[in-house]
Image (tube, rainbow, N blue to C red):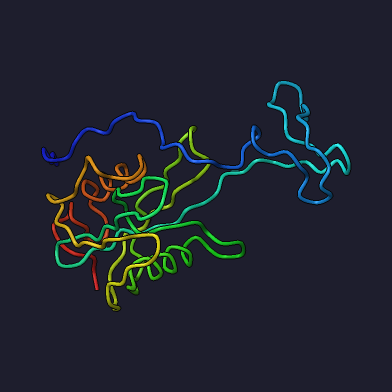
Length: 199
């Protein structure tokens, strides 16, 4: 299926935003001593190791969970009211909390950012980039109820047809990738299959 209104995906870098990295961490979270790079195995990158208690601070990706809600031939986008990507559009989503499943986080974040209760459809995709320390997990979603409600992270919520998606104003490479996948992969009765998610 060819959708000629879909733009090609740019190879743009992820927007600049401060994250914990081997270049920014300085102190051990357990004892407060200085961290220093140390080779743990030959041929592998060094890890940050505490000079006091020998704790190895393995740098791990953060996990983000999100949904693309779909109802009556329209998908829901939120416009960000915070950095990074202030004023840009994306789908509801956010960080998975400690002890929370990815699925529960996707449901919670959607509710917090939109006021809607949704049911998860199929897994749409998992997106990661070398320039960003996050892994983004996105699900299709069917709206069960609720009332659209803004939160401190967004200043607009809009139901859009696929043709109305503001491609040049999407927040992140993962937003564009997930939107393209949502609109071109027939799964769970999504738009590529020409109908809303099943009841």
